[in-house]
Amino acid sequence: MTGKNALLFAPDRNPKDQAQDIARRAADTITVGSLSAGQNILELEPGKGWFTDILLRLTAESGSLTVQQPAALDAFFGKEARQRIVESGHSRVHYSDAPWDKLAPPDSSIDRVVWLQGPHELWFEPSPGINFGKPNLVCSEIARVLKPSGCLLVVDNLAPASLTLREAASLHRSVPKLLKAKFEEAGLTLKGEMDSWITNRSDPLTVPTYDPTVHLRTHQFLQVFHKPT
Image (cartoon, rainbow, N blue to C red):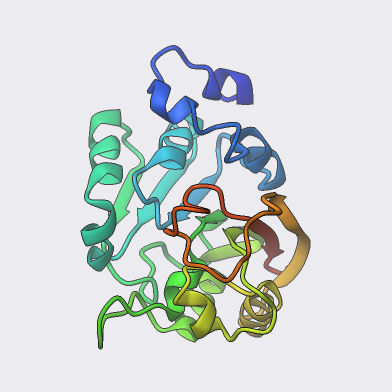
């Protein structure tokens, strides 16, 4: 079961997951990320596992999946993504709760890295001294694990261009041009970008994403990077 329709409309998918597919552009994410069976995929910050379930199905017959979510994020998301992995019975999946500056996969082993609504976490500290990995090291780690010509797919909540990455992170958002610079410093090359991947023109961009006026309806951008050969 590898076609997009077969994946998304599988009769055993949770209806609550399926209900998110259109708003979060599940089919388009698969297309833009060039995600396919047989790939070795790394998902960062699975949250509650909506897209993890899709990736588990995509790699069920060939390829592999690594899911990495620092243990400190369990306080926000619980262990739902990990439970999905256990229940899947997938034999080629690995879950890591290490910080992102210590990625689990070996050098040049990953075809695609998927990071949905998460890069802002690198500059967010939920409490003093708590972080999920040093930003520059995390970007370098992503470049390390990607195969030559491998891709990184990023989606995040849009912040005004006038903010720093740390200021944007306090709103659970990112500034595209600054995020791009960080990944390029690590040796990746921007392949494609959309400032209006998910559009909400009424999102002022200056309120936290948990604000009732934008919760689950933020304006989001997309970036795709590749590792040069």
